[in-house]
Amino acid sequence: MSVDSSPPDRRRILLIADDATFTMALDLGLQPKGYDLTCATDTDRALSQLGESRFDLAILDEQLPCIIQNELARLLREQFQLPFIVLTSCTDSACLHNAIVGGALAYLMKPVDVRQLIPMIATAMARGTELNALRTTRDQLQTALNQERDISIATGMVMVLLDLDRAGAFEFLRRQARSSRRKLGEVAHELIGNRGATLKT
Image 1 (tube, rainbow, N blue to C red):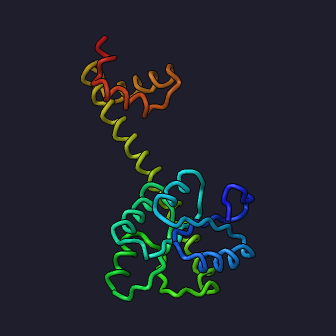
Image 2 (tube, rainbow, N blue to C red; image 1 turned 60 degrees about the vertical axis):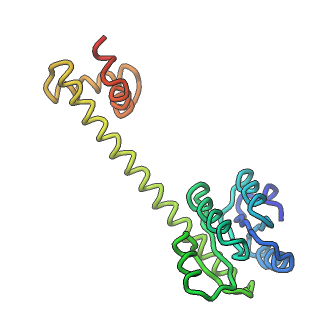
Image 3 (cartoon, helix red, strand yellow; image 1 turned 180 degrees about the vertical axis):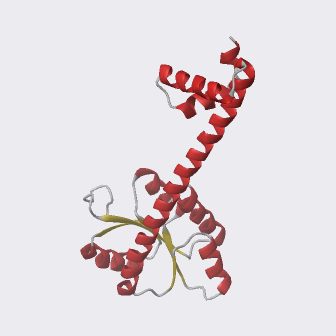
């Protein structure tokens, strides 16, 4: 169940649970399907593994104390951007709500049949890939919007400080970008950051 020795084409799963019997059964079921399993028996070990290796999915056992489980789920979602599923024996609808709100892509009742878990793992991984692609697109769009805003603001600053019309101010920024071999957005962002000081000297 070592992650670091895994071939690059195999998918890697982090199981956060302290049930040795279930861990062994899951590992035996996953290996022939192209998955490698690493087990962490507590949150500290899980965070250590996450800091050292790349995983495609986490499986979170609900037996962790609620506050620890919620914090771990938050870290998986926000810091590591790692899709995860939750295994639980809780039948309370509030537990299901908390898991879904916390970002779980699946919520399975224990005891879990490994044969039923494997297709759920494949589905969760596919969904995680889709979400990562959407997140990347969102970040790219946000970066583009931020650059457009900076360029607009910087153009306005150049108009005021150098007494140019908008077209002339924009062309001034373009020349600055070309001469420094930087992107126009970077030049604009720097100009805003120093409040036009470089134009006054």
